[in-house]
Image (cartoon, helix red, strand yellow):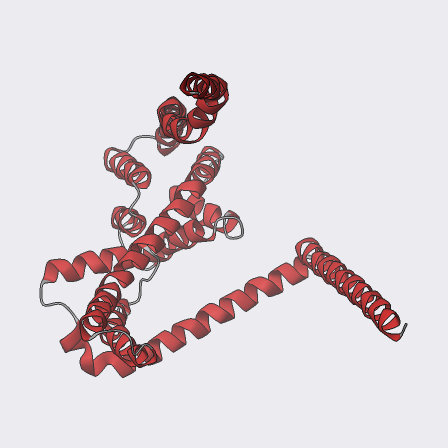
Length: 319
């Protein structure tokens, strides 16, 4: 009787505990959702969140400067000797959004530290596996060193791809806003500054690049050079085409509004053609999932009964 009561009590306790945990999770989810909605609806909190992000970015820049000061004495041993390799890495870092002069030193320092630390970590952890032979340990250390050498470059390529994807998504909106601003009577410099302010919340990466164009122009850099720097920092062919068009327009003195309108229409046609091309490739891309996933089940359903009957027939003949 006591054992039955204890089992019932434990079962009821488990149910009560489970219900309490579920209720707590639902309450936490609802409370978090209400805070998020309140943050989106309150402009004061949105402004405060942007200020917090800016303060965090400034703190991150200060930490990066302190790290580069510490790593400066070993820069000569870490940086590559070939100028083309250094310039290629600098270009990728700029395309990824790291425009600091010490970014290249920090990148190669991280690569060297990983190249040394990962094999040492493998050698240290090999003590936990006494059954490993020396050949296995050396092979694992070599693989770890190769990963430490290749991983920073792969991560950098992914960061470049991610940022260029964000810029590519934001570019049509920026182009339409630029056309509207120029056609309304603003100059090119004022239009770029206005578009950068409008995109500050929705497309932060492109807004930063356009702000840099305005800052360089106000600092005395030629507008054509500032636009070319903008194209080099982004690394997108669409932006290179826009910059080439604007430079040619400024050189020959033609209407900027007409040029932007024509480029906007051509860009829409280009996007439509790219979408149609992707849609045309769907049929070819669906062949492999169909062959691997659908056809085996289809053949099993269609031919399976006949195969079973043939097996039964041969079995009866054998008897």
